[in-house]
Amino acid sequence: MTKMQLHHVSYPVRDVEASAAFYEGLFDLTRLSRPPFPIPGVWLGCDDRQVHLVFNESGTYRATTSPDIADVHFAFRTDDFEGMVERLKAAGFSDDLPENDRKRVLIIREGLAGFPQLYLLDPDLNTIEVNAAPM
Image 1 (spheres, helix red, strand yellow):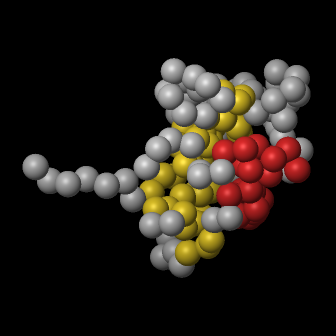
Image 2 (cartoon, rainbow, N blue to C red):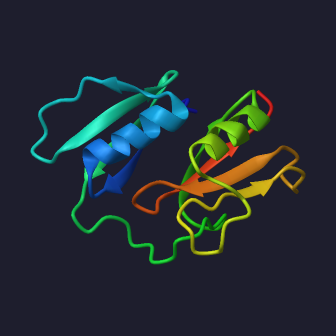
Image 3 (cartoon, one colour):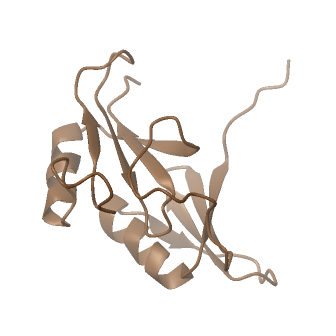
């Protein structure tokens, strides 16, 4: 059987530069060169994988402003879960903010997955998971 490996994920964004700054700042992603596609966007490197942010004036279809574990998302894996929680708190994110606050984080330290997970939203309401899954 052919071996498959995830190469990148792509999210629609309304403001490419603001979204790129969000991912660069919170997750230490680095900009990669990108072909001159007719649609604006940014490619970001995450180890040997990529996150593609592509301009879409309509943005995401989401209407709610709270993280939802059942929503479309991708996950970053970290070896310092509590360090990431602290980094998010320093950026104004918290699990005790009101339900519809865009900086509300859902933190599951001991869940059915067997490893800690948290969920947050990017500036365009795209859901992101950060977890400490074993390698």
